[in-house]
Length: 368
Ligand SMILES: *Cc1c(COP(=O)(O)O)cnc(C)c1O
Image (cartoon, rainbow, N blue to C red; front, side, top):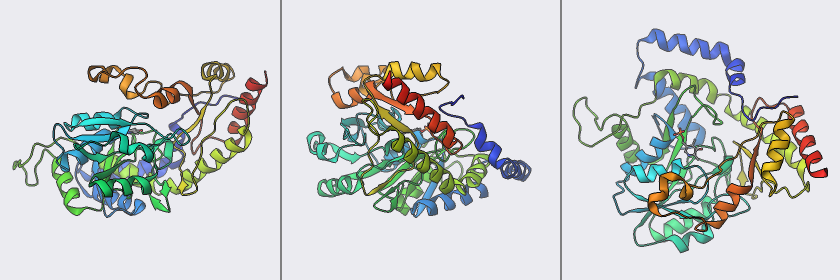
């Protein structure tokens, strides 16, 4: 049996007739940017996460950057970001002209630890930007409470959490605004780069609509220095087809995650994902921890099981942030997670039998 860590083609195969129809409709319409398909998708996506507004943009990185630009962050302003996770969160802050300040995660959930926020707060802090990592929301009740006490914005990196719930409310509606990615491998993916901002602040949504289109509300009237960050009609049409399937596809991920957890409990030194009682994750990734990661990875590879590491280098140790003086030891929890995390295959088109096969290989690795 071969179990790749990720396959994108089955999502097309399942929906081919609808996607092909959407393709022909948009191509024949003669309208390829900022048209009715985008508006229809924006309305549907906002509804799906309980936000009043959704603004489609070119990708998840620029979604976050545009939120920060629209909030008016300036050089010298600090934005608290997780010390672990994907570098895009840090880059969005940097590209908006502000400074990312890292906060360590809770080791059990891999998400930003609200108990540590006080230790990274300074008079220059303007916002907190947690990631809902691997599809499980950060502890937003505690983060929002801390932010309210200190007059900070709360933003969400919701790139991995389409449909995830926190105390019954959906990611994308848990702070002032959220940046979402529809990169093809995400739970809701396009067939190219795409992203969006969700917010219930009408003024903020308006400013982002202007900023995504060269800073112009009326053509050739540029009141602010915007970006070119538009979501195409074609991708918006594809996304609307896939959005209708998102709940069912997330449900399949939930069932596979439960299957993994049941089969792998107590195996070797594996640390399995922990889900707080207020969280309903959508399992963008299924990530375990082990001190024997490299050996387990190659054992699985030899037996046809693909794995990945999300992420092998924490942002402060990446070349991109060397100029900021990041060094080993600065964020020990993020560093330990980077050394030990392993992503197992999960997705709406992974068969339960494939998960059983992966678990059998893992048990035999630790039995040996
Ligand atoms: C995918 C991702 C992004 C960036 O999205 P792009 O659409 O690739 O720009 C940002 N943050 C996190 C946590 C992601 O996983």
